[in-house]
Image (tube, rainbow, N blue to C red; front, top):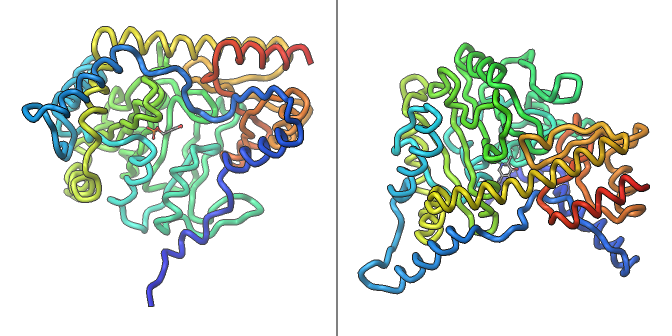
Length: 404
Ligand SMILES: Cc1ncc(COP(=O)(O)O)c(C=O)c1O
C-alpha cells in the first residue's frame, strides 16, 4: 500500500492569506456597499514596463517563425539573460560571479522552497521571526522541522531568531548553532534591512560555523540607503557560504509572468562537494526551463529603457511607502520599514493583538492589511501594510487612518 509524505500532515492549518480572504469576503458579503481598500497582499499593481512588453511581443513573433522558434531552454537559462544578469547585478557592484553560477528559474518562491532538495534532512535551520512562510513550510514538508506546537506556533527543530524593534529587526546570533540560515533583506514582512557591517558579521559567522546562508534578495531593487548591500556577495567570503535568490517579481512586476534566478557559487562546498553541481543536477532533472518569451522579456529589464522604466515603477511604489510611513507617524503610530522596501511594519496601538487590529481596520475603516502574527510569533503586536496599491488608494487609506 502506498504511503503519503506524512510531514504534510504536520503543517498548521490554513495559510495566512486564505484566512484573510475568508474574513474579507464574509465582511463584504455582510456589507456590500463597503469601499474596501486592500493593502494586504504583496502583489504589484502596475503593468509591465513598455520596454519589457515590446521585447515580449517580439519574442512571441520569433516563436511563430521556423527560423527563430525556440524549444526547450538551456538548463541554466539562456546565456543572453545570464550574461546581462552577471554584468548588471554583480560585476557592476564589484561581485565576481560568473554565468555558470546563475540558474534561471520561474521565481524566488520555487527556488527558496526547492533549494532544500540539495541538503540532508538532518540539518538544523534558523529563520528570522517573523519570516516569509515558505522557508519554514518547505522545510516542514521535507521533515526537517520536528513537531509543530500550535500554542507557541513554533516547530521543535527550528531555531527562531526574533526580529523586533528592540534589536532594530536585525537577527542576533542564536544560542544553538544552525546549519542552514535563511536571511531575507530587505525583509518581508518587516520592510527593514540590515547594514552591510551586520551582514558581514553573519557571513563571518556562517564561515566560522560551517553553515550555509540562503539569502533572499527579492526586494533588493528597493534599496536606497547607502550602507546596505544589494547582493550578499558584496560581503567578503560570501561566495564560500551563501546562496542568493533573486526575483523579477518586485523589481519589474513579473509576479504573474514568473522569472527569477538563484546564484550558487562554485566556491561553496561541503566536504569538497560543490553545491553548484548539486543544484545544476537538481535543476536539470526537475525543471525544464523558464519560457524563452519570458527570459527575453527579463533581459529587457536590463536595457537602458527597461532600467529607466522599472526604476520609475519602484519610485511610484516607494512614494506610496513614504505616504503611508509619514501619514501613520503623524497619526501617532510607531512605524518601521518603508525606506528600503515596499512594506510598512507598524506597532499595533494600545497593545492590540495583530488580529484585533486587522478586524479594527477592516470593520471601522474598510482597510485590509496583514496581521504580523501570521508571519511568526515575534510578529504579534505588529501589522504590515504594503505600498503596492495605487497612489489614489494609498492616499485614501492613509486619510481614513489619520482622520479616525
Ligand atoms: C521574501 C520573498 N521571497 C520570494 C517571494 C516570491 O517571489 P517570486 O514571485 O519570484 O516567486 C516573495 C513574494 O512575496 C517574497 O516576499
